Length: 460
Image (cartoon, rainbow, N blue to C red; front, side):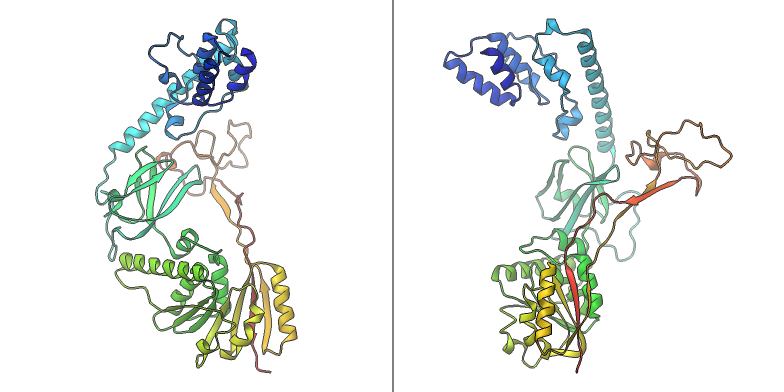
């Protein structure tokens, strides 16, 4: 019965396997001490060999240990099938090939530990004052201060590994899988500074833009994405001083873009039927305004008036008001058009945001059956295509160089690789035009978000 238990418990974690064995011992099921020692030595954690009881007489584990890099980043190196099978067998039955594989693994572990130690020592030696020694303050620059909304980013090998938006507060810490950064260390730094975590990982700390704030802010419903919001602003031709009506405040993303477009002289009336969505939009709007006043030293225009109610029955709210444009983000916008169109200026645009094409069909059918002076000009879906453009690199991280037509093709050149293993800034300078570039669509593209319908009021 020991062999089946050994095979079954080998795929469990060390603590869980140990607990199971203790229960089996109490019920007199397992009494084989070498079997228990093998379970203790079969660990997949980085410090399993250090957790042995001092009173145990079990032989030291010869299983390959994990590197310090894997321990710091909280990732476990996967064991090969040969390593898993070899740990289930007695050590005197292993062949020379298995022992050679274990020696190779241990050598790689030592090299990784040494390289990680050097990286962390270099990170600690770098000074972190209030401003970098080479930084020259430009006129109008303001350092980071408590209360601002910031964005932390970490990229490696041309890939974004970590991004988080947070509010800078005194006494708190920025937590991530890459280490900790105290908020007090960020205060007073210039925007765009590189600050190292407790693990020595460089994190870029900067202020978030409006489109990034809308993407990472706390939301209830889905937001109008920046690519769609910009297209709607272009459709509606929103300028400073306009009076705009918005139905469907949602999380407040479109309200913020409209607020910036109309400026101090304009106004936005945002109507939301759901109370929880109404509260979420108001909180996000206030949070952005407070962060903006800290970073710029001036107030964001308080030009958005949020109203909790139904636009279909909001006749008294719209009485005596005219709008330069209208933005509708509703499930059934054709039901609200009879109450909205009379207050829209002739020749102005009503932009409708619809998630599904079936909603667009219902909208067009509602316009056909109604006598509203509206004409559908466009139905579009905005799609952006991200591209990867970067210098072609060899496998060792250095630049590839262009080959002249008369050169031989037998030169020992490695294949281009987008994963950099060295710092490109530390290489010898290469003349302009000597480095070839790779350009291809990004593997991660943004999918469908919404359909945009452009309706214009025409007096027939």
